[in-house]
Image 1: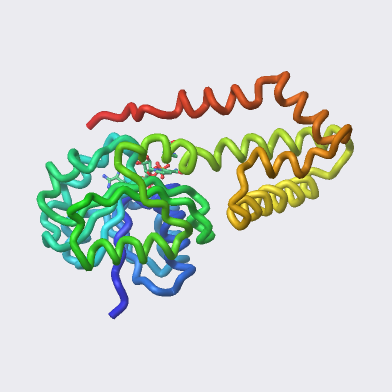
Image 2 (image 1 turned 30 degrees about the vertical axis):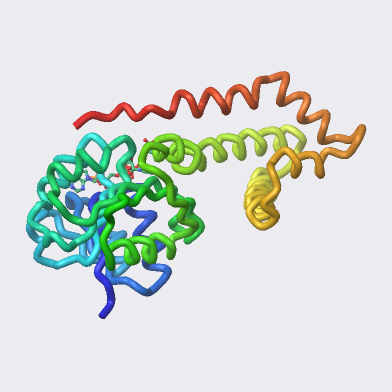
Length: 262
Ligand SMILES: NC(=O)C1=CN([C@@H]2O[C@H](COP(=O)(O)OP(=O)(O)OC[C@H]3O[C@@H](n4cnc5c(N)ncnc54)[C@H](OP(=O)(O)O)[C@@H]3O)[C@@H](O)[C@H]2O)C=CC1
Ligand SMILES: O=C(O)[C@@H]1CCC=N1
């Protein structure tokens, strides 16, 4: 029987997860979200049954529930789903919301926290997953299978999920800012912006693939690009002088330390 996966909060993240799961053709998609034209269209596109009442979602008997509501609303939303059978696993993507907070409202059931990222929409996500030690089967296997269909799952301790969420979850936005600035530089030199976008996106995808497949440290990969006396090292010098590296370290500092409250 096809597993029914429920996405609670079908926004940017929930929608990206829905798209990635739809691509696999392996799951039946359910959703919970207030009614609006955006969600109605997405539901139609992804053959997803979206309801706007928690009791209706419980009646649809999902096999796995993924919480992607705004973090400050997630504990209250989880409470509205407490009637799910105690065997139904729940995975929350809400930044800064802990397993303990969710367990308090969802009771004793398989429960995990994660930080995915928007590339899950194209099954190329980086998903930090914190499974509690006492996770029972088959829930643990189901969670890893479903998330594994969306990209690379990296299991971490819950205490590390905050910083994993910054580099993995916020990271695409940081890279998008870099890509946008690189395209400005290229346009300044007369290149067509759409051509610049194409080159930059392929370059970023390939740089990530090379790092993943070689397992080499970024500093070593950088050295292979920077020919002695060449052009790259002059660009790196400019980046250092303008605080590129310090800016990224500060971005991780500023974005970490979850600030959401129930
Ligand atoms: N965006 C990202 O890249 C990442 C986000 N996350 C986490 O995912 C969660 C969602 O973030 P994001 O997708 O960016 O936010 P969005 O605002 O885009 O999405 C939130 C969705 O939840 C819906 N919603 C609001 N209240 C309820 C409710 N009570 N029941 C059901 N649905 C509800 C909203 O409906 P409506 O359409 O009416 O606004 C909206 O569709 C956050 O907890 C965030 O920490 C984690 C990792 C990465
Ligand atoms: O901006 C946010 O709060 C969410 C969490 C990680 C990425 N987006």
